[in-house]
Image (tube, rainbow, N blue to C red; front, side, top):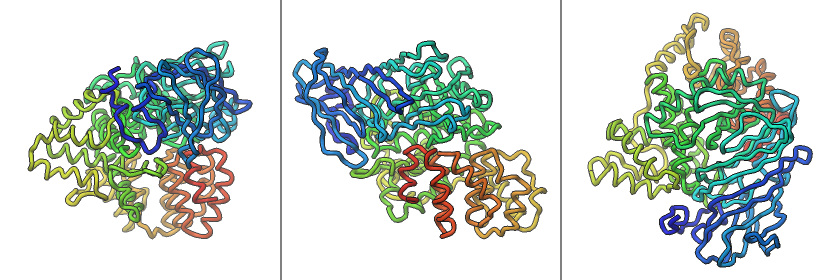
Length: 599
């Protein structure tokens, strides 16, 4: 590797990492990991292959992680190591002195109950109810809680892992995976493409595999596999559509893992193996745009990665745009327009929520001394997407697609910050065209709060028809007479999100009897309806509300529902009562947000 030209070693400080990769940088790791469900602990050693410029030390990130030994090279003799002062949410830097010839370091470690990336589930918390389950969630800076690493998205490395688990369970990683169990419970994994630490993942459970095509498949618990296989049958078509747009898929296989419902996100784009929530299994393939989103991350995020969490919009804005282009290729422009419209509504809601902290509505964030999770909002996703759609509208789709294709191919397996993106945009697309530069107004989009003036709301013909039917109901048409038979999930969500604010209890009951919202098996529809039930004190839905909050750990649903409950004294009491029951089912990513509200 040419050290001087490697983007991950260029000198700038990631505010969320103690590491100094411009002095000493990780290149490859060989891990040996043992997963102990009885003690709820991962023990391991890692041989870390490094490169440095005669540096006197290398610094790794750790947090609530016990270090058992550090050896230099093959000496098998412990060397001295020290820790930086511990900082809230960042943890500590593990400082290891180097010799001029040092190229390998072995680190022994054990996880602790404070290792926030890990969620250990009892059998009762799984679909099958018979075997325990473990999964990790490393984004944004939780990889350091289960493995020593340089936990900055600008540092990319390859890895292998030898993982030992109970012989009746199957482990999976963000790597080349096994499709069947073996007898001894020992598995070897390899990730040949360099990835940042937040894409490290491990899951262990009673898992089985089914193919979805030549390059795609799905892992799930046996009780979930049939439904998952049906739901995600279009995955191979999505992959082909993505390649048609922006170039070859660089990761070999693309598989999905359906996790237990406590998983805190809709999906996580771990390379080769997307982690997905079971709440997208609706029975009608209506929520699979999430799969398109995680697949799109194989280019935007996994291939070209935000250099720091201040540049998070470069991951998510491109991914939302790309996701909807994939869905347009599969299901048409009207379908994609519905997704854009719902996203725009979410963006307006987020702008309202962040009205007291307008700086958080800029695309380029400033998260120094803050937990980077605070930047994981719809601003990065939907404002980023809106900016790219604005750019497409100005230059035309053909020229814009060529630009994006060139962006991914030019910077593949590199990190990208906002300043470098702006330079690339100027050189490759604006090209000193002053009129175009002024019409785009990239500086306002990227560095100023809110949405620049003159941006028209997204309009969708299908949603205009929904609005017409909603108005008919409001003015007296019985809900059973509305032509809703062929509505998609997105049309139902538009209907629900645009219901009048002053619904009466008889109106709530009328809608529920007609459409069965309270008992809906579609998590998106049920969650949206339950917010109305809380606001309107529709107590017939409260048992379903409690069941939903105890079972589902997806933060997208939890935060709005709990916040809605907290609007009244009676709701606050109910929220705290439910949270006591539900909290053991939630991952730390969710409880870190909810504890501040409810404890």
